[in-house]
Length: 94
Image 1: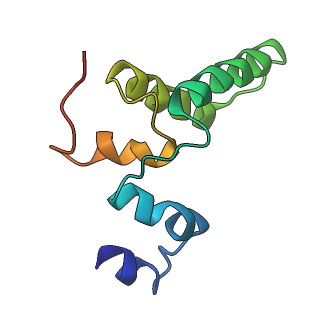
Image 2: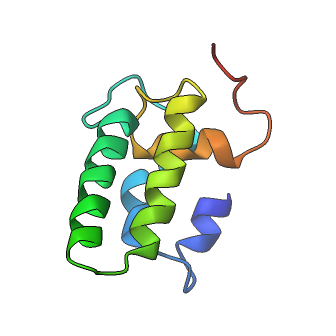
């Protein structure tokens, strides 16, 4: 219901349209894992640092992907961030 309401307001976004359902009901299929995104985010941050470019959003994004990996969710795609956001969605895997 929340996705439907957001889709009719200023909160509507391309992410809501493309990933909203996956965030609500994770699928088994993953095209680009959080573990790969964490690695690539690190590469981007290193390049930004070398060029002396601030990248606070990229740093925050990497932090979330790193957290997913640490929590045992690295095999999920970006929609797996919902597993960190919604309390009780998963138990930390070890």
